[in-house]
Amino acid sequence: MTTLTMQLPEDVFAAVRSAPRDFLKDMRLAAADILINSGLVPKGYLFRLLSFRKYLPADPMI
View 1 (tube, helix red, strand yellow):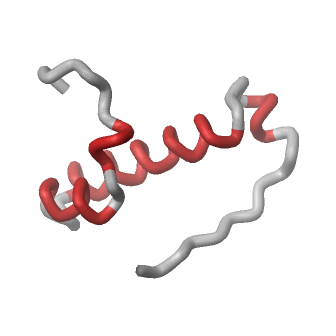
View 2 (cartoon, rainbow, N blue to C red):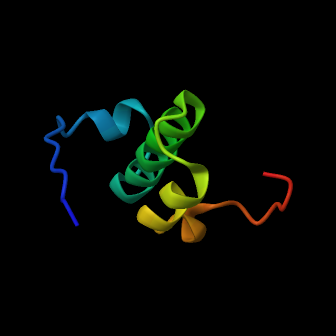
């Protein structure tokens, strides 16, 4: 699996009022949303690829 590394300024977490781990989770969700809605990646494949289930809300309607 390929690893993506990003460098972010330290103050970005304060700006978005988020801990680094929560920020990473939000970025993964945003990336998945973009890929799914653009039709670039099938939903089932993306969920498996990103180990998405542990990040999904408990609400079955989502």
